[in-house]
Image (cartoon, rainbow, N blue to C red; front, side):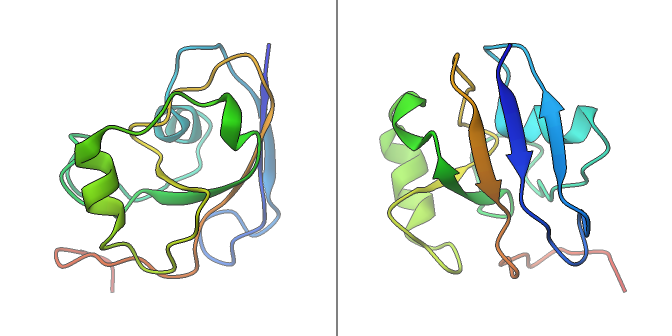
Length: 112
């Protein structure tokens, strides 16, 4: 069973987190199931970039991004070569180390 290690993020998971997940789940769904409130303004339909993450380890184990995901990632804040939309990146059998960027582009955020 692979692990996802979330690096500390001052608002979303200040202490970081290590979770065990089943293969076949998206990074976003794994985070949400484990009380890591990653943003997902489009309800995980690959229509925004609010769930953008950077895969610091294990990037090559993920299935390739779709053309639609690649196009959206071009609009993400802090884009890096190992960036993915967590709603689209499906965990395989390898552990992952995930960084949630400090900022996101969310035109409909309801937080105050």
